[in-house]
Image (tube, rainbow, N blue to C red; front, side, top):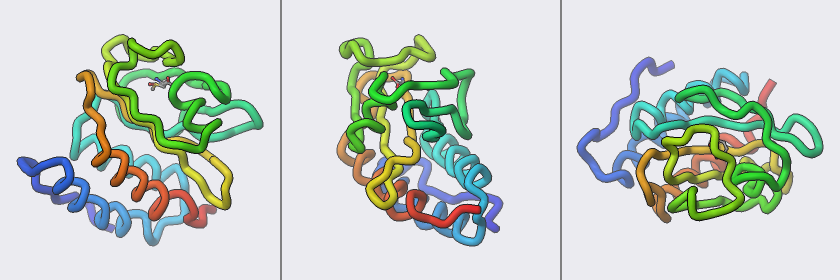
Amino acid sequence: MAEQILYPAAGSKEEIYISILPQIKALVEDESDLIANLGNITAVLKEAFNHLWIGFYLVKSENELVLGPFQGSLACTRIRKGRGVCGTAWETAATQVVADVNAIPNHICCDARSRSEIVVPLVCDNKVWGVLDIDSDELGSFDNIDREYLERLCNEIISCKEYK
Ligand code: SME
């Protein structure tokens, strides 16, 4: 297993995504433990982009997400379906990009420093089983480049992998 990831630190975010995605694929390829893989993925994303908070919420019952592996400060533990940006991504099975979290009513504030957010659902066989949530302390941090590459990460690398 690689113990270090390499990426063009001074590059554009697209260049960084292009560099890290294959490395993440290689990192999780031979490991079937879900928590280990999600933990390492948050570590790689944190190192590459240094956003305020990067983590996963996992579907644990019919109507609730529970906090999974993450990098960042203390976070809300449970989120109900349809609540907040994460619960909306779950309910709609669609990526949510929020340029200004304070401008929308349906945002759950876990950290007052958060200004913008992207949440990508993890979908396999048409079923959402978790979400990837990234928070930034700057307004408008996420755009279609983040959407494209984070959806690739979730859809092609994480979502339908077999976990034991
Ligand atoms: N802001 C999220 C809650 C999770 S935290 O950001 C870590 C939401 O509205 O669902």
